Length: 120
Image (cartoon, helix red, strand yellow):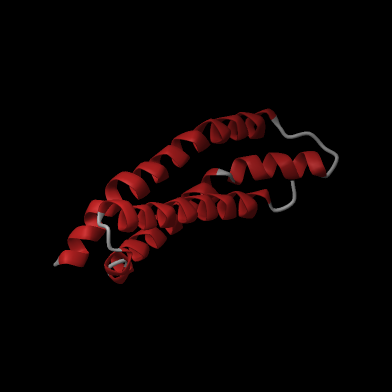
C-alpha cells in the first residue's frame, strides 16, 4: 500500500475534476446552447472547484492518517495495536461521508455560486 493516501487524493481530484468539467461542457452545449460563452465564464467555476478539491484532498489526507499507520505496521511485518486498528476502522468508515460531502459541494453548491460570480 505504498503511498495510498496520495493515490486516493489523486483519484478524488481526477474523478471530480473530470466530472465537473463534463458537467460544464454539457451545460454549455445542451442547456445554454452556447459553449463558447459558457467556457468564457468558466473561470470562477474552475477556481471554486479547485478550492473545493483542495479542501477535500486535505481532509482526505488527514482522515487516512490512521489507516496509513496501520498499513505501515503491517508492511513492516508487525501487527498494528488494537488502538491503531480501531482508529483505522473509524477512518475507513468516514471516507464515504467525505466523498459524498465533496460531491455535494462540487455538484450542488459550486455551480450556483460560480454562476452568480460570473454574472456579477
